[in-house]
Length: 162
Ligand code: HEC
Image (cartoon, rainbow, N blue to C red; front, side, top):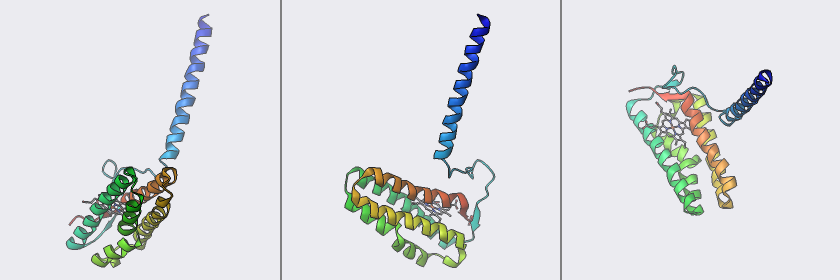
């Protein structure tokens, strides 16, 4: 009898482990892009040596990016798809890139940084194309791709402390 109980326990334990392992494997897949947080582990980000004023300009654009994302999500919540599309195009698309670069020091950014910036603007343009479908099942993955592009760059680069 005792032996049986142990066997059952072993089996249940094994099942639990398998379930947990499967769960972890799944969440691992969901966070495929996740890398160590630079503030909790050694900071391996590349530093961009901007002047103090260009650095400020860069940060101002970044803060605006975050605000824009919030306003876009707000417009989606309110089902104002036209506004959401306009904001995405104007503030996160290629137009915004040209504006931002005109006030910064583009030659100081490595080409891999420009690639990440382009990928981000491309993701935004794609989102702007998808928004008129008014289909959240298509819009959300597209918005997620924009956010992934933000995160991808943040994991690779920092602006040198001025
Ligand atoms: C191509 C690179 C790149 C992309 C794309 C990018 N960022 Fe950034 N962002 C940076 C860098 C570099 C910093 C400075 C980080 C540092 O020095 O610690 C920064 C800083 C920030 C900050 C902090 C600003 C401050 O006051 O210091 C915010 C907020 C931010 N980004 C939001 C966003 C959002 C939202 C997106 C996407 C819509 C985005 N960023 C896309 C490179 C990028």
